[in-house]
Image (cartoon, rainbow, N blue to C red):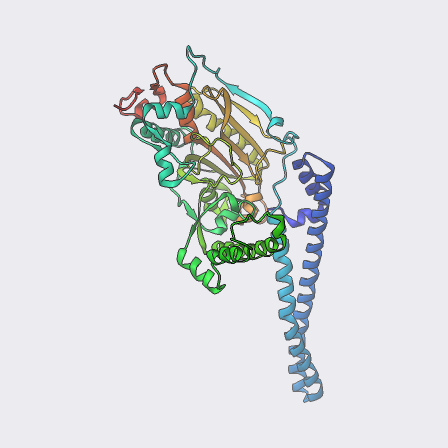
Length: 501
């Protein structure tokens, strides 16, 4: 979240940042100027209201003292007038407090929806096509046969089952079994061992269900609610619907009962436009109520990445500078709705609702965050180098970087079956953007007062995508898969994964 004081003092800074995220288009700049004007107006109104409230409270306190003085002098007329004034002031206080609270909530809501400001060195661009190459490792292997995609390899081994997963959970899930399941587990253990043993990260086993405040702190909420999975309290949900005297089934019944004829015509039939509008309004009202009830009944969220619990370990705390940098890692299941991924990577393990990832998080001082960003990238690269997987690193442009990021590096691993580079890790520096949302600070060894920490996060790396890369890179012509040397200690002596008999 941005500092309203900074916006007040340097409004052009936020306007420029938002325009850059919009590829400096005229429309983006105009929208940024309008937003900043709205923020400054809310800020002015908030401060004016607080000033009025403070003045009113001060007068109330002074008048209360004056009442005592008047009574001591037996000046009943003055005392009565003052008592009437205090009574009126007491009536006015709640209204001003409510107004100040309302303006504050509106201002904070606006601020919460604004993305982070890109660092000056972030390349300008509209989308992934404008990302800038930074470095690369290895050379894509050549094969005497046409390499297969990972799902063809896994299914050929009889150890990767999407059909059964769909019966259990629907699309975008997989069941891995046998040596392939062990290989996936080995990758997660290997990544953790390298990051804890060689890179100085502390392993954490965090909760994978978190509260709203945690998701807000790392900026998944409120903007990206549709990308998340929530743990719905069914009892609370049903109670909420009952309070509104509505169910989704009732709403659907209302719609169909209002359609002429046999009730099976489509809502788009122009002959029934009036009914259509009435039915859509009824449906919108019902679903809006149900959505709000569901939102209020979702007491916990499934984490989309361990960045959420790891970063929030320092929320609402003041660290000492000696505790920084704090480097944390975890291997957890992650859950994403993939709301905007319709039709993309529908086969295989590239884009799933549930996946495993090893996360890296750093909490540091503002002076060290840029250096820590480069270090984190090197740590993520190291595990891929040990697996001898070819990859490249790109710096994301302003139009492709994440909401909370100031600057992001993506590592893209080579997949011979796809004949393409695909993302396997993103390493981002967020500055104090998340720290302000979490109220996470540190006390400098020298200097006055606590300051906000800087936070960084990165994949070290995505286990599922690493499995994809290993299957495609180490596949053999006969369909088997060689185990990378770095993983042999984790595979119980197994050097080759072959088809189950």
